[in-house]
Image (cartoon, one colour):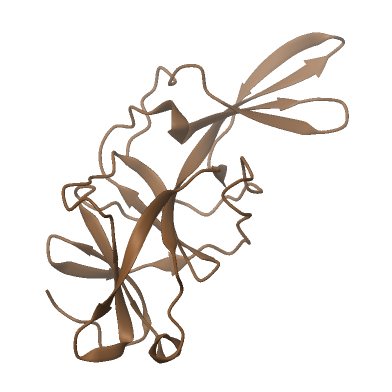
Amino acid sequence: MAMPDTYGIYAVNNGQLTALDALPIRIPDARVSISTTFTKPAPAPFVDGRLSFLAYHRDLATHVPESASVRVVAQVMQATAFTGGKPTAMAIEDTWAVRGGAIDLRIAPVPGNQEMVAIRAADPDFTLPPGRYVLMFKNQAYDFSVAGTVTDTAQCLERSDLQDRSVYSECRELPSKPLRF
């Protein structure tokens, strides 16, 4: 595996390093069911979900975080507004939110470099299904996606616009037009 020569957060897939970009919003604790929505397009997907990560930063020489995790980024696919007491559904495009819950990852030192740590699942055979995700590391979210057709309803949200607020819920079923990465 190649090692990075500049500081950053990297995904490792099939021995290749890819720098991950941070999302421009603050992500709440994993106990909060949904973040604020954002419209940043999904990054180019990785071929498969067999990923690990490398963090390379000067702070890691003296302070290594105790945890890292992966969280689902769901697309808001539909909104329902109530007009005159009747529901009206409308399609939504390019709106995303980070879901609550998390897949915990392990952090390990990289031999020979105190400023670098490896981040990976405890199970070496763990694979993320197709969809969009964030790596949560040091209270920052790093955006990535896995190629394929989404088959998990956790990747899909519906919004109901009420009089004083919007309420989000997981789609009961995936939309007829499949979500692909």
